[in-house]
Amino acid sequence: ADALHSDMSITGCSDSDGEDMYGLDGEEKAYADFNKKEEIYPQPPFIDPITYVEGTYESAVANVQICQQNLKVVREAMKDFPPKH
Image (cartoon, rainbow, N blue to C red):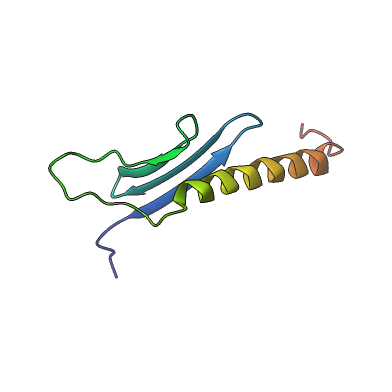
């Protein structure tokens, strides 16, 4: 069966930065702005506003912290693996 819509969620991180974004059909629905400390909904003014439940930004902060911790664990676990030739 073909889906009517394509929904996506992206969480990514580095040691010093993070990204948390939601999209629908190739369009950005919402993203966490870690500088402003809030969830941003980049929507045109002619539509009824669409938002997520309260706590979405806090969830994004937690997800990026988990991502950064996982990154540290993987780096530690992989440090003794010989490089592939």
